[in-house]
Image (cartoon, rainbow, N blue to C red; front, side):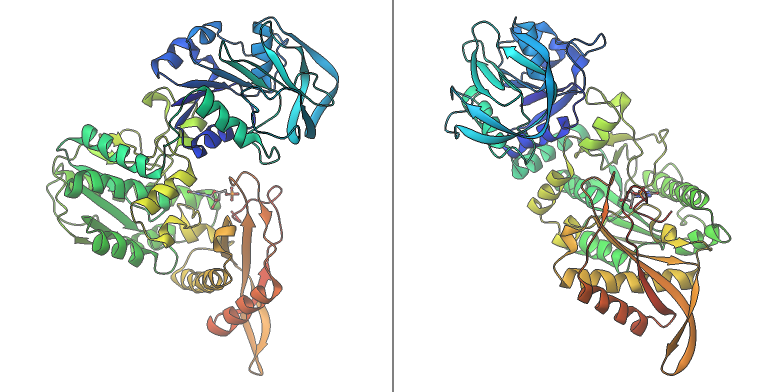
Length: 531
Ligand code: XMP
């Protein structure tokens, strides 16, 4: 494994991902963990990330000099390079002109790090401080217009620095540079893959769970599905999955969960049909946050009741009030001590963790399970990025449709019925329109290109004319966005003929709808969902 130390750079996560794409497991740790913590992981290499500070600022995150004594190669990127250079007696100063964006790199000496690369190549930069002289003993490898030393190496001592960002796509030879560092300098085996991850996680789950019973709240989303399936592979029917149908899912999703998990994979499954209970709870509620809270609270109550029943803490065999329960497989989970969570690495990083379970939020999935649940968590995806979760899902045979499912909010369709209360009729209209949209987008081969695509049903009627009759029907809004992480998003430029088919089908097939509009707002200023 390789440790990436995060000095607050915009692209630190991306470095960790690129290393993994080379087939090397990498972990992102905050810069302040210190050399001892890094050494404990027995890494084959350490990468120091970029960061916003100047190495001369008072509050600049420092380099723990002990890191350079671990006998492990170190690669400094941008701020990381400047830290290295300054620590080792090179000259780092603020340049007259900062270098931001695309720049041209001239390689004078290929050394080990840039071996086999062109003498001139584009590279992406973002810095003002610049290395003017490399540390004593190090060789300068390359320069750019504003960086006299854009790369250096001291092979003997295993110290490497690059000013540019190898992790971004605008640096075409960046990935090659990382690969060279990992393979030729660190001696990594480069064989870490989705198959290894699955195998390794299955082994770890067995170790953790032993012969204990495990409960998993399954939502149908890719994270909880992959987590559940891994646990099932590891401990078989010691696992019982609970799926709460709140009636706010898209068309056929509940059936798909039942079919995939209950029938295909024969995972012991409890389906709690709580559709009526949620509708009753939502009656009269219009305000978005009130809706979210109501749904979240109701979800937790039902899941807890069901989990307690399964674990045997409650002897009553009845379903939670206002629900119906049907099961498939052997769903005995008596004495269950473990709860599966689909926590991802991005959740772990976001909560400032990476070093211990205590700092981790446990509420990223299934609409926020409370922390006082008396279960020990099983989190097989804790070390993985979303694309790796998808790769593992594919590896262990999860159907393509579930592996590539677009993100879907916990409160489901309820937050897409806006300005009025959630009713059965509106849910049905929305579900039918959404199904048409998804069908056409899939048929056009665009589903995976979109971060999300969905319909919104405002509480608005409009006048229309259909079959020579005046109609007064619902307006449906189509929303489709592209995004990398949901923090920002752009409205998707769907082809006109696709939009035309979608609109024609919606007004033709969904009786209550007579008008379709398109949302062309990016985020910011809009959000992806309407509420
Ligand atoms: P916004 O609308 O804030 O959404 O741009 C960003 C992403 O978060 C999803 N989203 C939610 N997910 N519970 C969830 O589990 C929620 O209450 C919720 N609200 C928004 C949204 O679908 C998008 O992917």
